View 1 (tube, rainbow, N blue to C red):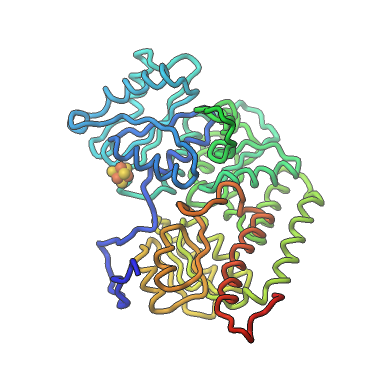
View 2: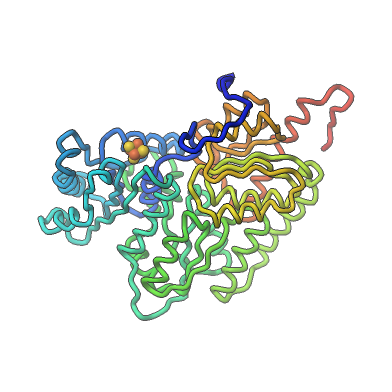
Length: 459
Ligand code: SF4
């Protein structure tokens, strides 16, 4: 009972967060930057921040996450980090030779007010940025927002720094996948490719953070969107952005800068959201949906009808990032499950909260929603009103163990299981995998609790 001190009685707290259901902005910025080919993320702050951000990503992906730091000491903290960053840019290009450096700020460099564009301009003027190489940046102060905000800010920076309109429109569709797994990015792109659509996806961490073990270390793996592609995305026919919180800022910035119209959709989690994604691709690119995709859809519909009886009416508690939480809630409601406790740690705004409340409007039980909320409140809700299933990241396992409720690990971070980087939960195939995980958890519990008479062989 690691969380035995969690009180059942809920007291309203306005100025105290206990066990936040989020982490800091630079982690998301670092993750997004790794989705640019040949990019070295750079943390402009102290070594402690950078070590934490790298280790969080390394533990989740089980891959060596490379990044650099301005390594602030007391002097930089007082007098500013210009000298450190200019020196770092020089060292990084000299020693590691990346195509591009993506600088993100931290609480410390934001608090002292470092002007990163001015520092980068000085580095260029001093000849520290070689010809054909790039440096771009995003402001990611961690006392506001979350890792999802940091991801959104860095993705938007890709547009602001690189996108160009050449006056002609290509048939290419831009895909902004949101803060999802490398496998999800690959699946989103695969669906578009099967439909015969040429895409530019940014960021794209597939083959970067789920690459093969070859016996030869490659500091910059083959995956990632290239700078050339980012430059061209300003001439695409349209943008499909998945997830309002993580992807909308970049999509809107591209529309404003290069007049590329955008469609903002839910993450394609589940049947309805994937239908919307496929249909939007069909309309935007002017193509038809091939039989191969209709087959995948039909298999998902068949599975839902086969197993619906075990999902119907099951009460679920969800904690995670806002785009995932909203799409997941809609998926579960579509399966006739009942999400009754829902928390996201990211401050996602009133519009998001309204969308979430609309999504559960048909659920017959009382539904608790908190945006943003913390894991303590989530646990208290579960103590007062238990559920059949928890869906959340690794940190939810302490609550699941204490309350003896099955847990499906989903979201970021997952430190204690494998599979998330390799098996997508997006699209029709991804929905099958997600249903498999949910059903396994529910049916394993059913088997565990069955006595000798009610134990069933065939489900
Ligand atoms: S919250 Fe701020 S100081 Fe702490 S690790 Fe994140 S960026 Fe660094």
